Image 1 (cartoon, one colour):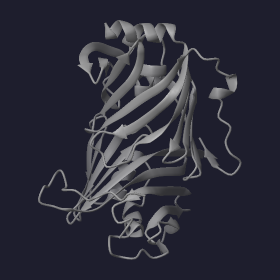
Image 2 (cartoon, rainbow over the protein chains, first blue to last red; image 1 turned 90 degrees about the horizontal axis):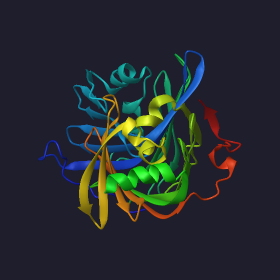
Image 3 (cartoon, rainbow over the protein chains, first blue to last red; image 1 turned 60 degrees about the vertical axis):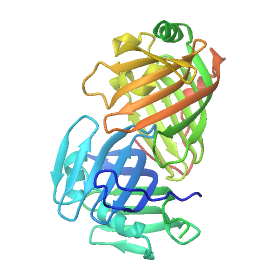
Length: 165
Length: 180
């Protein structure tokens, strides 16, 4: 598939975009005993200093944007709220009521030039690469946890800027 | 005027079917495309065929989304959400002005445009522009609150086709993980 050429990062113009990707995400989780799920489109862009993620509805309406730097994570939502936390995990827990393993998924995606290992995880999360692009770069990533309650996040990358590296 | 044309479309066209393309303005993503069928109020089947397979089915009460690659079915109760969502401009109840402020947005690429601004303050998007050509919406521009614009172009729109009852019922494929 046609790879996405990195362009200058919009908010800090001197930062060259080092990596970008677009795809879809799905989350299934339990909310006080009930099976719940959500799905949408995800756009992801990295520069040397920050990662910017847009979560949109399947029809493309942006629901929230995340600006993540090593020191903090800022979320702007479609209805104008703005939240800041230390990590993207704390930020999304506050915004959604459940945690999404953004940092582990970022490792799983694999930076340009770094091969992504097959299995990544920590005490709670188990991240698996379910499929790859022809050049070995991850395409479908499934993050699962059982504690404190079962949650699965699937990211399917439709295009990534290093797809033909 | 384009506003009258859109309101007449909402009144007279009880159901419609056709094809669409969808692209984010200035976005890096590829164009997606597929087919749609809808019946007022709030029933629709929106099928993406390229570059991936995904279907959104609403019976007016519940929206079901099935994504083949994610192998997931998502169900959401629409409640009032359908009323002020971009889809409502096309498939919603007949009276648009209940949920939207309509204004004339002039001529562009051979279409005469109507701007629909949601009346509810908590709506997730800023406005929708609807491009009319010979009495039918042939394009829509969705301006969300985070600066993204999604452009939909419709083609081959059939007015009031015979729509089977099953069109708006979602039957999950056997192996998909289903969760409400």
